[in-house]
Image 1 (tube, helix red, strand yellow):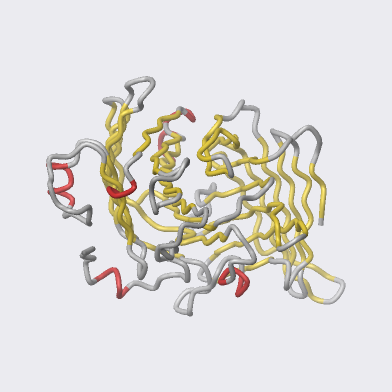
Image 2: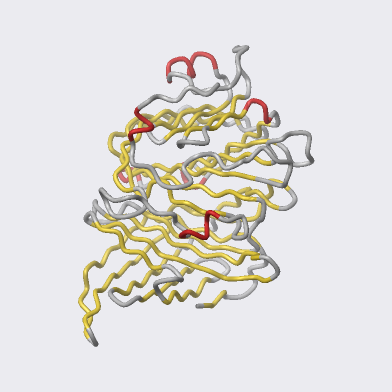
Length: 365
């Protein structure tokens, strides 16, 4: 039995915060992404958790924890035993145990208990991210524990929160699902990266997830919630090419939280255009009846290959940097006139391309 602290149920949470697996044997994955940015040292550390075919005894059954750390360095630990994974179907709460001296079913532990008993593994909720992993290949390690105070979920503050992909995300026809769990939050705690301990207070934090039984052919992603001179601003944008029944569709969206308000540009309320290079440049524009936005993300860094769930299991199929440059401009429309609401820049933007062959610029609308 999974015991979840009661305060989790009192938080404003997004749709799809809970675990989606229905117990069936169909091909299935679910992945979670937590991130904390340390502006003082110009670094971002991202934690990626995944579970595949949790029914067990399938070719790709198992879990993993990946970390994109200091200077875009990479750690990975796999957890083959699906029975050591746990998650709540009601709220955001999950974990996977590797090496431990406990003889009980996997479950949420008080942070001090987790630290004492779990030698390899992680646990994460809406207000906590904690774990320790050692990379199989390099022997490098990371140990982390930080508490999170959510600021923005996905929608206007003090309103019911929204599904990132709208009502279609409740249907298995449209897979994989994608949900921003926390567009912006404040993290306090520490990260021990190979013996170097980074302590932080109220650092920008972020969380999202995806799930399903189908896998996108190709995708791109931009994410940032630390901007120069704009502490109350968060951006997530992305797009992908995915199968829907017997056809393929390309979709993209931009979401901005700024000064308590949510600006949403999605296919059902906006025209969204993009021009994504195989690597190095991400450009997006979107326009609806009230607002328009333009984004440009760039990087001269080579990026780091990461694993992601695929039809053939967890595989290197995407490339990321957490140190991209971003220019954002948001304008309000009034007839033929437009007024700039916001111009912002960052040098700590997450940028990603993934999936299929990226030989040419992907241009679409």
